Structure formats: C-alpha cells, structure tokens
Amino acid sequence: METTWGTFLWALGGGLAAEALRWWRLVQNHRSGKSLNLPAYARSPFYWALTAVIVLAGGMLAVAYVASGQRLSAVLAVNIGASAPLIIQGLAASAPALAGAGEAEGEAPSPRNFLRGR
Image (cartoon, rainbow, N blue to C red; front, side, top):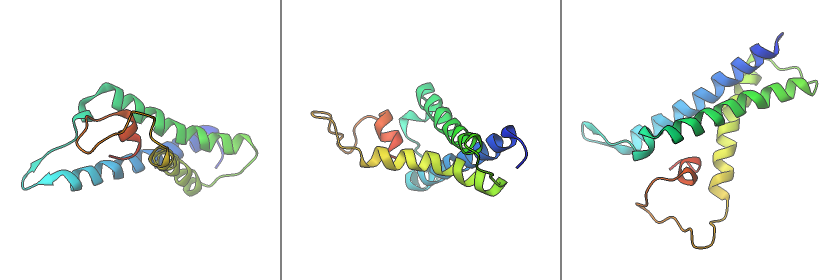
C-alpha cells in the first residue's frame, strides 16, 4: 500500500467489520420472536465513544506497523484493523475480576462487560 492514510482507512474498515460482527451476534443472541431486545448500553454515548476508540486503535496499530518499516497489503491492513478490537475483547475477558467487583449474570451493563463482548 502506498500511503499511511490508505493503510489507516483499510484497517479502520477492518475494525468496523469486527464491530459489525459483534452487533450481528448481539442481534442473534437477543432475538425473541419478532421483537428485538438489544442491551441497554446500545443507547449510551459512552459505549459509542468506547467503540470509536477501539476501532481507531486498530487503524493506529496498522499505521504503527508501517511506521516501523513493515509493508502492508490492503488485506493485511484490514486483518490488523479487525484483530485489534478482538484482541482487546479477549484481554478484557481474561482479566481477573477486581476484589468486590464481581459481575453477576443480569447485572447492569458496564464498560468491562462491553469489552468482554457481553
């Protein structure tokens, strides 16, 4: 790929695709009959800001590869962009719970649950 902006945009597209997959899973997991029950955090500005930061992190990771001298194809940039949100989600899912901060099933949505993909 010839430009840093091109790399960033391809990676951003990959991050957006990963987030679209997350929403597809949420829709499929919360579908009951003909009504659709999305999580309460779907309307939270904080959720959307966090989503934007995670997608941008994928774009910046691809730019970091280019800045370090790696040559990326468009497909590899998309892969890096898509991987970043999934890696962050995996790290959040494996992080130990804080003392006294157990998250029981049915608890209110939190940024930690969002990052874990719940």
